[in-house]
Amino acid sequence: MARLVIVGGGLASAKVVQAYREEGGADEIALVSADSYVPYHRPPLSKRFLRGEIEADGTFVAEEDFYRDNDVELRLETHVERVEPDERRLELAGGEQVPYDRLVLATGATPRTLGVPGGDLDGVFQLRTLANSAAIREAASSAQRAVVVGGSFIGSEVAASLRTLGLDVTLVHRGTGIFDLLGSTDLSDYLNELYRSRGVELVFGDSVAEFVGNGSVTRVRTTGGRKLEADLAVEGVGVSLNLGLLDSTGVEIGDGVIVDERYVTSAPEVYAAGDIANYPDPIAERRRRIEHWSNANTTGTRLGTILAAGDPGPLPVASFFSEVFGASFRVFGDTVGYAAVATRGSFDDGKAAVLYADDAGTLRGALSFGLESEEEDELKVLIERRAPAADVPGFGPQ
Image 1 (cartoon, rainbow, N blue to C red):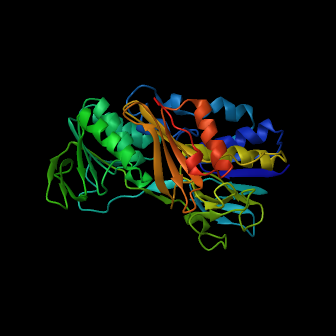
Image 2: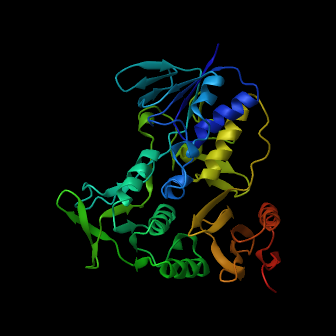
Image 3: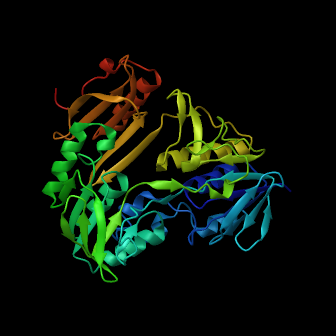
């Protein structure tokens, strides 16, 4: 019997298994993961799990029984050193070799660090894994003051969660506002005021020069000269892709692993999904690599269906989401390189849409805040149709 091997322990890997079996795929499956847990959802790690509202099993994509019931060999805490495409095998740490007939790579990413003095002190954390989140949660139970670095997803979400837990929180961000990477001053202004109203100190236009302490962090010094007291610090400054296992393999790399519309890499019978997959998006009319839950869910499900010789259907409009202090927003389509040309409705009124357009005024992406699902569906249809941004109706009180 043929053997399908999946490397990676995240959502994309679990969705490949689920979709493949649901579509009738009968190959033997081995899932190889460096993690200690079965595949889990990552969004709760900065939100509900970190706040203690759910436990570890509440993050799992499927319980361990699912893998056993679906004849999946689950190899946790197992590190892959390299892929050998010509021999169709993996080499594991320790030298064991694992053969495959088809290989799925969904290796995800590792958090970057600031690389400043004191980064190795106890109490300085990065967040990517369930174990990371559990360690931050434990530290927060006895901490009083936290410094969070970064104003994007991890930084903003962790800062909100730690403040909800009762810690005094300072958020340090070299940019001009929370989620300023989305290019909407209306959104950032709303979130800045929301955080300040909840008691979070915001330090913009600054960065961390040093973590200070004797064994454990007690203070954070910024490049601007601020000295911030801290029992706990979290760095949310981006990630690096886990691609080392492909060194010297000849697999084409370019901002991730280059794949075609069926997630096939340049190596025979090797596929990629999730954060590392750089795929052609016909709606965006360009190649994309997306580091979000929705993309892992979509690419994993589509690839599992393809591997079972099923029809995955058309690619949906890309999306991602965030939630802070109970306020959530979703982004549809493509916002990278496009200007936020208008805001329909009002964030203060609880219902708004930020529109992103190209130079011709064509709608390329949209940010939804407080909209009904039907209104979000309308936005996605307009993005697919490449409608003029001017045609998007208003939202909220007229």
